[in-house]
Length: 307
Image (cartoon, rainbow, N blue to C red; front, side, top):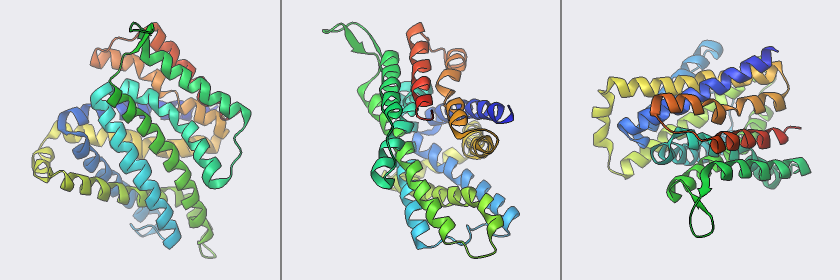
């Protein structure tokens, strides 16, 4: 029961991360928000590594480990979070979290392509159910053919991109962890429990550098002094970082330890459902019965991947 409760807490914290991410992005800009968030994540992770390993820099990682985790950081953080935080600006965190239920299908497909993992019949059904739930939430009656999309096309594309980035980035991280564990020297068994955080630290380095480059390329570096003086914006960025990258990720690792991965993953995927009420209260967004049903159906689709 402990693992199930922790998994539910993860969904709560990821809901908070999404809402603070939307507030911060609308206040200071999505790229600026990600530069701050990645920077804060990196500092916290390095401090944690320093405490537990004696070094703020990830130990033992070889070239292949850095290569795969760099790819994971580029796909998962830079591309995925770029899409996610920009989707907050267009369709809001409520619908953005709904599109994040596409991450398991994209992870399953990329795992099949990159790792030769089997795609079960239930996984294929899960993909269809998940997409049906999303369609139920974003479509409504009207238009030439009786149905029309209630969201801007750009927001939908960004939402799909966010799910794609997280799903593919997860598989690339899995490959990176495989190489990381293979290169550990004898006598470093204690480091295995810290390895996921060291890997996340490497990904955070790439994420921070990637968003910094995007900010420079867009010639928006001059916005950072103002952003750094914005106390409310910094608070939103810190809360999003703590809820997502720090507490959320740490609790997700604990959840998998205390219960089956399938149960944990399904419960952690409940954030599109959990976010409906606070989005209505704090953002004043209207929530229809079809949107609630669609969110539940999407989560049911995710659960089929782990049966």
